[in-house]
Image (cartoon, rainbow, N blue to C red):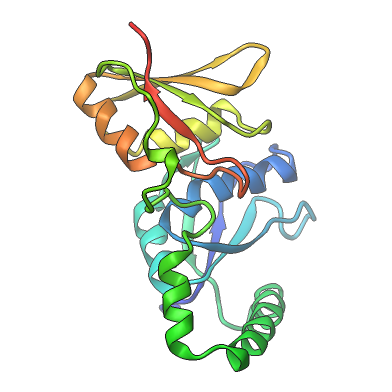
Length: 218
């Protein structure tokens, strides 16, 4: 029986050797490309091992993520994704508390205000769509290697690979030993590198750190 589309997606076949905090950060980095992630539930209990729930603010985000990431090799194991069952206890609690907060805010705001605010405020974990200074970064001539900086401390190779390998021509991520906030990403051609650079410019791996991408110096 098909499960009705839902804001929450259920993932199983997750690599259960990954620490809980790292798992949640990596899931956030991967899924927030599709829209605002409200919560991620991952537990290490025997019953919940190898499983996770990702709650999106928008239903369309959940649908796109499910389609695009079905079978994605997450920590070398293909993810199996479906919509969560609506009667899932964990999720009803998460959505219940989230819904209550929204209702309180809704009473204070007119619907037009809400629409305006959504338009103004980029979702955390999304690329920066406004023309903020992030977009005007001094750059080097086009090149097939990208230089990333302003990365959060918890960034790892897997997280960056998951972000960039959705783009054609992706080859590898190279971290810099002893420097957590910078990295290089190599593509097969400078045009392919340019597509990824434009798409992920200002992407927030965490709410505080907007990634800055330039071409690497030749």
